[in-house]
Image 1 (cartoon, helix red, strand yellow):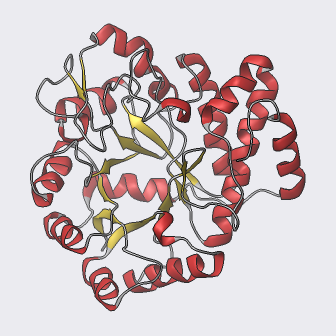
Image 2 (cartoon, rainbow, N blue to C red):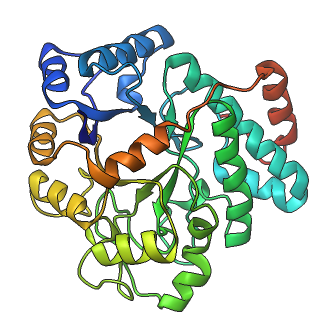
Length: 340
């Protein structure tokens, strides 16, 4: 049985130490980063090697392929994609076209990932940036209002699903007000519960039926003054499961981010006990991976049910003309996106 964690790897191929680790610890999934992705055949081999090592041909493989600043697969072997804000700009100019092109873009990304055996994309970003917030979200967001984010994020998610790739909505219940980068520091948000409900929570409530979500390493003082969402039962159970109605599989953001404190065993136990179904560790540091695995139990109970239900939503890609879609994307976004 798989354990309730998603792991990264150090490089472009499995080391013997990593292969043994995967076989012994059986993580639920793998997440890939740019350091793991050199060219298509190498990525396919790495994905296949992971699945062989854990003994599950359907083990999920994740990636953050948003476009813009957050794109792990890069030219020349893979196309460049726009950041979320480009679709928001198009939507403000022509709402119907903005919706169509947002879905088309996600369908193109899904086709790239399917070619490699990757079946989960940590997209769409549902965060709504607010004045004065850190630009760690910035142009990754579709817009500055919940209405724009809801409309475009839904199309992105449906585009991925149409291509046989599972979307992960993030960063629940909202990272848009964070004044610091949670990769480096712990953000504290002092907005009222009413403000959070009206803006930050709205996209997640609207897309609560999505299969997977990723938490925010953010303290919301109106909800829990002591713990970030990732390790707060008050937020995970009371707000995300209760108020927002999210019934899907809930994973932590990366445990190696500096917003969290404590050793990696403590971070793992705190996240799982608060209500995360899965914990995510990304950087490929073997000692950290070992500590996370040692603190992680086998996936079971409601968490297993939710993880299985998420994977059951992987489908066969719908028919698709990739060349025509790419040309249409570039033409539609000519005024809002320039390839560097």
